[in-house]
Image 1 (spheres, rainbow, N blue to C red):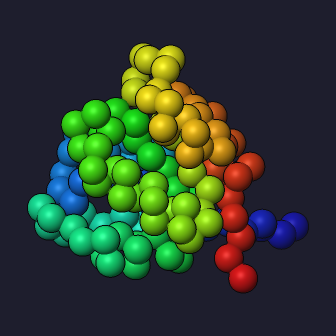
Image 2 (tube, rainbow, N blue to C red; image 1 turned 90 degrees about the vertical axis):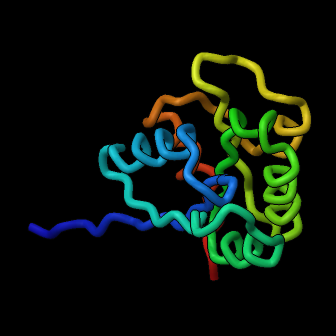
Image 3 (tube, rainbow, N blue to C red; image 1 turned 30 degrees about the vertical axis):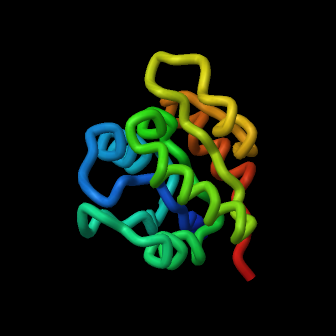
Length: 134
């Protein structure tokens, strides 16, 4: 018998540079997903984060996760994250706000996939759209 190694997915989860309830809830849900290992490059170090720091966080990942619930409140920083992901040609998955069906059109246009808060659906979207790093 042999054990198969679990793949590690390098992801960036949108954040605002500080702790935020939606971010914390999402990362906990993803961490609890069965048979899914990931490293989140979105670093919550300080209140303000520069574009250069965001680019350093997004550069090594295979996918970018945008929490659309943060968008209305923190539009500028989320737009900056999307712009950097697009510049670096990283696929974007948008997570709908909990219990909602719609996301802003600009997020919909940026996304390769849009999913709700169901962990298996989130994992499937990541696996399906993940950009392998060479």
